[in-house]
Picture 1 (cartoon, rainbow, N blue to C red):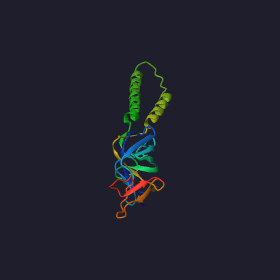
Picture 2: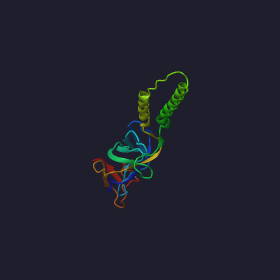
Picture 3: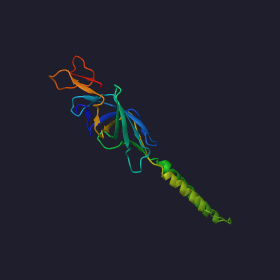
Picture 4: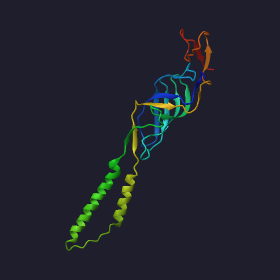
Length: 210
């Protein structure tokens, strides 16, 4: 347990990069406090550890969260750990929330414009029909093209934006075993406290790489 970060551990992290769901991409954050072992005696991932993940593009209509998968962590001492763990918000809910741009005018502005133009054309035809001018009405192609344009604009998905500097969490999906990286050696028998960094006069444990 001294060299294990247990499944279910929540690691607080501060976003380094902003996010936009328009296209898939990568995201990174910095761990805001030391991550202890399952026993609570050993610091296995120091404060300042950088965690990198990736997120998918496009948020479905009606959804307000973006799925993020954290892939790896790199400690300040150069230790790299594979995570494959999902991101959660500060309250532990899966995915990230953020500011949602529904693209309202992009989606419905064209439909409103086409409706106004269609109404204006209809009024114009009615006025001309009261005169001696003969009007040939062939709205089929125009209506079909307008319907296609409106359908394409309505299908624009919303965009989720999240700013850098926000606090998020890494939910550890499986046990992280550091036994192949570190080895603990007790140099004072009167204490059970372990300290993974190199020992000083005040330290009780020295850790060396095998």
